[in-house]
Image 1 (cartoon, rainbow, N blue to C red):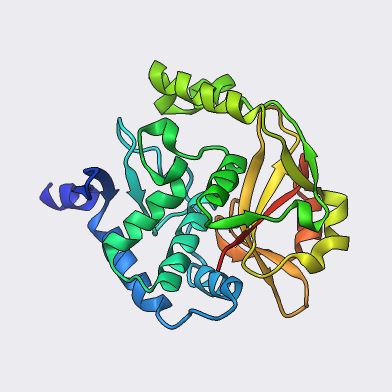
Image 2: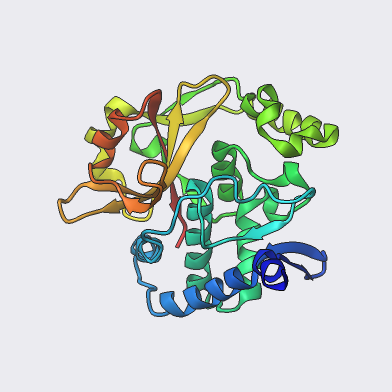
Length: 281
């Protein structure tokens, strides 16, 4: 019984001046420390190459959905043993920023991850998480962590009602709480007044040469109420083409897409194109 308790034990840490709560198993804390050793020396002058090199250290890590939906209140969840497409990108970017800034401790990692995952870099309840990835891009651009380059590579602005979470409340356990629900609706209302720039699927091949290794790729969709269905990292492979390095729902692990990005997207139902964001070196 004791071994079972220890196995499922989740460590709640209160840290920093904000007394921030962190959910992290002992195994995941060790995984962070091991990863910091693994990536030491991967920093290159080309920050995009650094991002890809870090991203590939996660190859074959299992895809696991909803790893952030834990407990009754929002905490900073640290989980390197199972990743969805968004947490994969967040963790890779966090480790990249740490290398760039010469940081190497577990506390540095948690601070960096929080700064990426939450609105204006601060965890303040469930609604402060950047749930919609177009907002994730915009808010991290505001923090000067990356730049949305979609318009520069041929993208065009569109407007679209964003309300998937509030219209599918039953899919999100935290939205049972009325306060969380109203705050998420407020975020959606804000997003509905903000155009997003999309590089259409049919235009990707012709503009592929402007996408660089390390760029963050977000897959746009025609699904009602939703902006992005999937995300990953661009990597220019030996064939000279851009492929997608991502936590795949097909193979259920982190991998590089077998087909180049433009061909890969044609096999995804309801995909309309991509947004592209470049981490700032």
